[in-house]
Image (cartoon, rainbow, N blue to C red):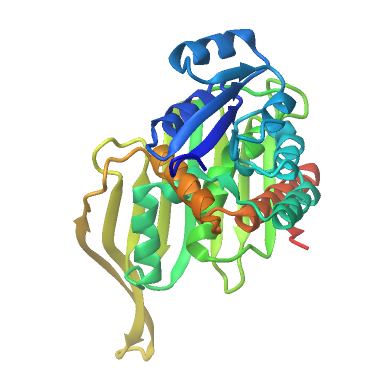
Length: 339
């Protein structure tokens, strides 16, 4: 730590990594020491923006520098385990983008490496740091929504088509992390069906169902082959319902005083259902970039060497759901239990 600042290197400055770099470098408690990327074009662009930082094409050169205390990793998902483990073994605090790894075995290995090194390992579950999700968490935890009955999400677009991971691994970590964060536990089973239209065995669209103990279910729909751009999350409670629309610039959260109440019909002495429709409340949500909040949380956690919100445990449980969903995809939708 130099002058109360965290010395940091950025590994991977491509389409998303450049955004992580921008936010990390903007933090007053960060001293950007180095930038690493195998692409000369990416490296040249980043170096022009941050001329004081050293550059390298090989992460090993970065990890050998003892003056660097932390690294942020935004490389392809299949490389996360190898790069993050090397960084932890080199004594660095690590921020790694989602998904943490491509298997639960790799995830447990990273968790053990972080514990052995005594370093912070934080996973980039961006939406856990979104002010709108903070509001959802408050509504759930205070009981304002009543008992949670079910939730569902859509994350679709005509977007980037990947060749090294399907839409489930690429897009679903966002919604899985929100669901687990809000419900507070892992599902019992995961079932998923998908279809690969553009590349064989790489699903472009996936519909998944997460079944939790107590009867709560979560439905997740992800696709990069869709005419709409939708990033929406809905929670249905016994008392109220709420939506989080990340595509809405001003009214991201809407709370609906709506529900269906089961009561006694005194004429028939049977049960009756009464529909209730009350006010819609649109709370004010701070317009702070979630990525900046997330990066700031990592820096503060590393400086204090304390466990972050989206730690290795959080990263691992998301990977476990992804893994179960992948096995279900391969079994044509058969439910898969989380071991």
